[in-house]
Image 1 (cartoon, one colour):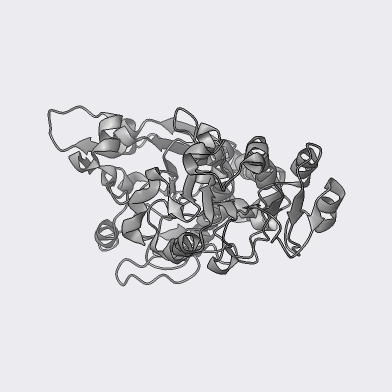
Image 2 (cartoon, one colour; image 1 turned 45 degrees about the horizontal axis):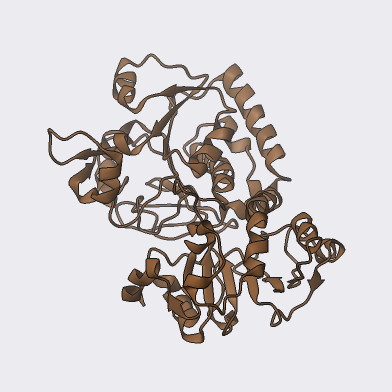
Length: 433
């Protein structure tokens, strides 16, 4: 089967690709024919793909399998063709239901990277760690701008944005420079102790923490946070990091019931959020946790309204919502942003969201496509994970009934629609169509 790679055109910032030229060369050496649409913004130029053995062509009609990164426009789908992308439909996301409806109507096949998981349920193909890497830099940059607006000069305002830097090495270099200044000069009295909370501990959080840890810091357990703040024995020459797991975020409704992670996953209605106990102590919240509507929120607009009407400004300056679930675990994430304008300020009193880091409310960094800010490293890493699956996908006869498809278990689990019909695991999506 000839495979194709679609040009990304969701916005001018999307420079990623699912397979880099090095991956294409490896596939071509195995006899797999590859075509790629031309792109003037893709991080790897067309000539690199031609040199790797791919044909550069606007027309992908001869390809039985097409790869993309972001959602594919409804007009692009064709009958009998298989498509693999981040479709963002598994939660019934309303904004992508027209696209899903088109896949069904035209008899195409849809495979989602996000649903490719191993036997332990962990994702096998992901950009998540790069979302965390770019997200923490954007968050610290926003913190510097916000504190400068408040009249406090800090090393954070000198940290550049990933989209404007040469790559992760330059991000690391700037963070190390900020670390040296914090260690030598300290932070202003008005911001110390600077406590950064990370919600979640998966790939996204690991990426964010990897860069944050370049700064001088001390890690606290969530249970230590309140007493630490009350004691007041902190240093202005380091930051304080707190990582929150599910067991820290919620408690059972029944007072005599112990927390059980699987029980929480299965029956979240049996639990209540206690995250608001920590919020008054956080200067920055970095949200990296999976959420859907069954689970309680971390930050509600009600809490924000109350916090911003009490005497004295709250400690919480910035929310780096890397997960970017609109109206989700961070209720004030009411819209996604793009790298051109990465942050807005949520005004609790009115619900307004003016761009930038100024105003009477927390700054929200909610860039929807954070890995696109480090496109070369992100695309190469993603392709390293994807390319082992490509030969079986290219060899599969998708005209066969689903039960007869020669696919590994990981890929089989990721087939949402096969030839215009939901596979059994995704029939629940019918109610969203």
